[in-house]
Image (cartoon, rainbow, N blue to C red):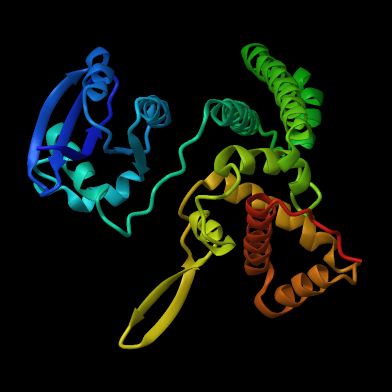
Length: 338
């Protein structure tokens, strides 16, 4: 029987493979396949649909299987879990592979766009920069916590912490002084690394025509534009701008029954990094909207007056996501309002 669909449970060294024919009968069940054997096994299969979870190495294997003539599809793990027949107590690699094989056949399944090597390379720069930013925040909080043990309470503002901690360094006892001094030195190193990676991202954004178009929008700078193009490419995996907003978790969740639909909080689905960048950009839009008279600024101001600050930020971020999709998918140019 011809294999039509294959589910592969990805791992570091040992993979599980489950394949079915056109009647849904399991004809290939390999619960233990070594990493060096997987590509050889898939190369012997006829062209088929290969389902995988979007996890570490998923995009690499998708590119490798595409080169062999197959059609790989990546899915979020939470969409695969309901199809595991054995339930939570019977979870194993073979059951996961069977669930992936079943999920990839669903007509309404939502798939993750497959990224190329260049996209993943750009995202590596973003991930490392974000790691430095988080480490810098943790270092600042560590300085504040340690100095509070000696009666020196510092404010939350980062620049003030740097200055006041350095000024109060001489008042600390021996070993505490050494510890705080080392933390301040490490903090300076992190500042330099973040600045360095900001420069890398700006160079990448300027070299990409799509990012240049996005940077003309209010609230979208080099970091947001580069992250969007590296994550969604040309946006062809989304039918419309609202699908992109929903994928980013910027739309309200719906709770309906008996014909009554209630809208709740935003879903916060998708990539939290992109969502955070868009909302940070919305802050800058809203901060200057009161001094402008263009259509976008008037709309942002009216939403803020009617719904409050937080909901206005989300609304602006969702609108920017829709406009960004139009620029990427249709190749249009953004025209600044008069």
